[in-house]
Amino acid sequence: MRLWIKDPIDILGQNSGRGLVVENGCIAELIATGSEPTSPVDQIYDASTHVVTPGLVNTHHHFYQTMTRAHPDAINKELFPWLVSLYPIWAKHITPENFRLATRLALTELMMSGCTTTSDHHYVFPAGLEQALDIQAEEAERVGMRMTLTRGSMNLSEKDGGLPPDQVVQDHDTILVDCERVIKKYHNRSFGSKLQVALAPCSPFSVTPELMRETARLAQQHDCRLHTHLGETKDENQFCLDRFGCRPVDYLEDCGWLSDRTWLAHGIHFTDDEVKKLGHACVGICHCPTSNMILASGHCRTIELEAAGCAVGLGVDGSASNDNSNLIEGVRHALMINRLTYDTAGVTHLDALRWATEGSARCLGRSDIGSIELGKVADLAFFRLDELRFSGAGDPLAALVLCGAHQADRVMIGGEWTVENGQPVAVDVAGLRYEHGKAAKQFLESL
Ligand SMILES: [Zn+2]
Image 1 (cartoon, protein in one colour):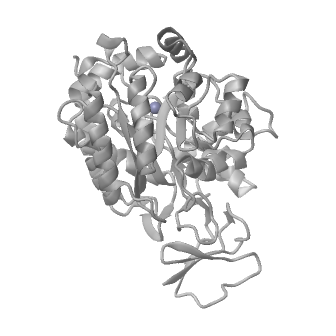
Image 2 (image 1 turned 45 degrees about the vertical axis):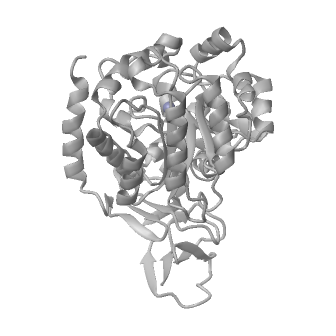
């Protein structure tokens, strides 16, 4: 079946002014302005009311946090006190049932914002939630999204000088055995894979250096990506200096993590030398503009990091510090926060869109997604410009970012429609809203 996505208003791709042909889930042909497909098509989709972009790629999230949005105990706090308030609430209330709803809601919300691939950094494993990644694999398949399951971990609790309470951490051996289990079960490196696995000790203040080192060894052995939070706050710098006698990037290097296998969430508080070191190693950086603004964490040095050799991608971050899962909104936030650091020519709407697509795909180590190019998988987002906010807009791609697109009208993943007329094909949104909202009420109970 050859499907011609014909005559979009505008498209974020080269030589495709008249659209593209999708065949066997991939982009089989790009149709340049003034051209026609070179061989007959079976079907035409009239995209003349849509702006088409590559499917957006989200490189950092914590799905379970959709249960604690705008939580009264956490609002208006910076990262460390925010975490200390939330850890016990999460520890007490996350169950397999509400974790499943949180996962389904985050995936659906992301997809409705034009996202086709996501990772989720899941690192909270209270007793009873040992199958968290299995639940996520099932839900990703159900919703129809491409996903990097990110097996997080914490093994340094308060009693050992870490930040999290004892009941949310696991021991070193349990973590590594489960990492290997989920890799063997779900890590598929083939072209167009719908599920991959990355390993992700949570942060310097919640895991031991030994776990960092062992995790890096395991990732190399099984050819999977490595992820962690780094350079998010000044408190983290101080923690590393106090505990390890060095700054976070030196700690990372010491643990064997300075490699092109690694992508980091946030990456804010780096010196010039550290930026150079990260770039030299081709470490990826997931810029999380919305979360960085809400938690007052600081400004990511996106342009210097890219110039040094880092891939820069975008992430919405967890839904207790965003507090939504809307990636196209994150593109707008990325443009705006970067304009506080760089001049108008230094960061444009096309840079912000590039981070959310090509840059994010590089962070996840994927060359088969992230751009509209011949041979890549057909992961696409379609936006309409008929809401009031777009009226009067000239440049269609700039309008998505500057006027504030917040919902895709259609989404295609691997050649299949997963969102049509603004609604996900496989999810009852009203039912999900009701069930998730009901489950989330437990998280407001006092401890
Ligand atoms: Zn995070």
